[in-house]
Amino acid sequence: MATGTRYSYTDSGVNMRSIADAVYMIDWTEAPLLNILGFGPENVRKFDLVNFPSTKIEWIEDTMSPYTATVNEALDNSETGVDVATDQGAYFRQGDIVAVDSEYMLVTSVSSDTLTVTRGFGGTTAASHSDQATMTLLTRAMPEGANATTGHTTTTTQPYNYSQIISEAAQATKTALAIKKYGVTDEMDYQVGKLFANGGQAGKLAQFLQRTFYYGKRVQRTASAYGTMGGFGVFVTTNVTNLSSASLQRSDIHTKIRQIRDAGGMCTHLITGSWGLEKINGMYEGMIRTTRDETRGGSEITMVKTPHGEVEVVYDWMCPAGYMYFVNQEKCGWLPVRAFEAGKIAEQGDYFLTDVVGEYTFALANEESHGLIYGFSTSS
Image (tube, rainbow, N blue to C red):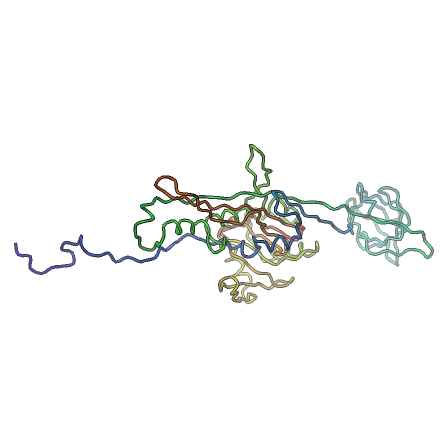
């Protein structure tokens, strides 16, 4: 049989392949929170740590004396001995002007958790008040010539966290390193890059580090226990709201930021997943500002305007569904005991091995400066 005309499908086995000289990755490679909250030496300075690195870190926190107490009895409109909750009498001194509902009272003396007061102070009307009503300390007015008196003081606390080792090795045979490949110049460099890239802000190990923000549990390292760092949930317990599958509303966001502000904190970033991002874009239409940040590789920064100022919205694909985190960038972040480093191990048999290892811990100060809304519907 004559061969005649040759076609593309004739003896196709000798045709050269048309193939892209690049590898396209559909999975996320970035760990955005590492860039925003920091994971380098700058965070050691941010928290003023001394004697670092260490496998355990501590930071010191304090609060001002409380301005509110709880009335521990029902009051009629004439009683002058007012009981407050256990140990809350220490908040008050002679000369304090307090308010229960709309009535002002003048504290003339304190005995344990009982305040002796002048009712209807300053022209207000003495009234009945319910048990568990809130008493608010307004100001203090001492009589002329009064003796010095000490006030209520607070004790510092030392929150703490442990370090966690994160590692994985890349292995390639000498043959795999010798042959040429499309899209891969060096097999070992390619595999290491999937673990650790862009200074540690991308790759599998960077993602493992960032996941500690959401899932980290604080476990001290021993001979029989692997040490792990605690994440956001270990520290933040006050400003936490479960919406129990209800739809997220703009008022929920404003309430959470207000709670943070009322505690003396400041919310700089709002972190959420894809559904939370859609809700924000819908709820804040006309109140969103987008800028470009070259320090983040030219990425777009989205700011939403709230009654308490602008807050940056961060989309994080790792964020659990139905969760929205409110954070103060200046009061949390990771600290490197040993920054991620790729160390080549001597060849073993017919292969080479490179181990990527990092050791980090996480700090979050003043937990009332942060907040969380969770359990909101991801369908409505």
